[in-house]
Image 1 (tube, rainbow, N blue to C red):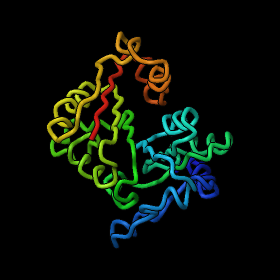
Image 2 (image 1 turned 180 degrees about the vertical axis):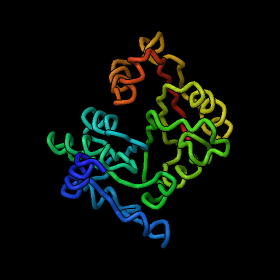
Image 3 (image 1 turned 60 degrees about the vertical axis):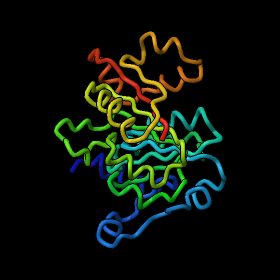
Length: 228
């Protein structure tokens, strides 16, 4: 195990914006953590809550928090050494509307209560091309049913990805599962980008580590937005 990972894990333990409840308690004992209490106990306001699921280094979590101080943002990933960067940046910039949660997405409903979340971002998550049941691909209808347990009616789900299969499945599966397709683009930085408002262009311009890597390989970035 690398010393860098150990250092980041140790630092995460000291960060007030990082939450790392024992996953064993959720898996084996069915316990919950902060469910229905994020506004009251973490953010101390009644502002909307936005999740970035599979947040990696937390670029979208922090980027959106900078742009929208009147919303609360939570980055969620199982690998704490990844989101260490985002958590540290948020503290250095005194972004009090940012938190990070270390857990596995398949247990996400243990952490959020009914109507607690307003919006979700799924940014460059593992495409899982052989996951025919959809229980590992977090953009699937199987996961959508989990998200609906805590999303407000009419909540937005954004998907940004380089993988054509993820894009095509989202266009097929999510409307079939009852979502309203609001907008989509096979090439988000093409003509579609220039048709957007300056605010939306700014949001789309937030680049994750993986997006920057894929763009260097000339991969085309796709975008889907649905309303539940």
